[in-house]
Image 1 (tube, rainbow, N blue to C red):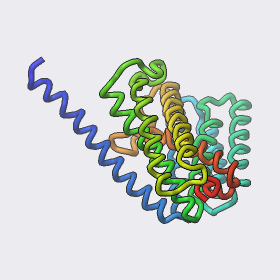
Image 2 (tube, rainbow, N blue to C red):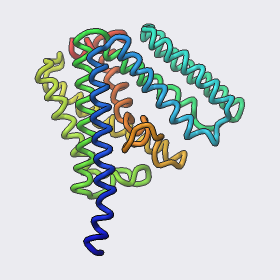
Image 3 (cartoon, helix red, strand yellow):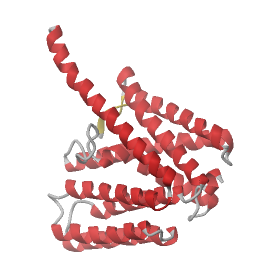
Image 4 (cartoon, rainbow, N blue to C red):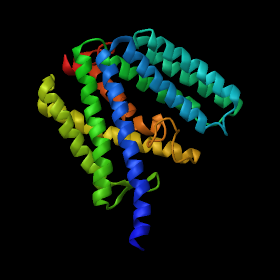
Length: 284
């Protein structure tokens, strides 16, 4: 292959990487600003994330799910997200999401519907609620969110670059052929270091070692969430979940690890500090 041909092939790769980086920086700035603002602004961000996830799933499922079934699912999801936006308590929002999912499942069973919208509803609504309740309204919520973002983003970034640099055995070739064990290990190590760095300033109740263990768990959960979303896309025969984020595809493509890790962190925080103020169980 000539040098000219090699140059032609390298340009799109560099261009795509630049687009990914710019999109990621813009999104990170917006998310961090709304995280700092908290209150209704962060709840609305959570609602937008939940709605975007469901929209992309429903779009992928369009060929196997009827319009009537999708409308019913949208209405039920809308009720859950509206409650979340209005600041309704977790003890109502989270069971409401489960009940809504059961109703969608029953409708699918009776009407013979496909598309897994019964699973899409809690996949969209529960992480949205977890994010909103983790942030809460005080400093503990800010630290919880910074910890979550640091672990997930470091895992995502370093898994990508370490995997590309080192290659090696595939992590789950039947689900996501591009992911490698080297990338997974590199991402996990980076996630732990990023979580410990946040803990150094936040002084969490679990201490540095407890926080490192939590970061390890979150990093692994985030990568499982990534693989789950890849499996959903493979189920529907698409490469990207959507087109809303330049260089990244859809919102699901960008937050697949975050939503899984958010639910895991919320559960830990709720056990330690209560369902309504989970961040206090972590950084109170």
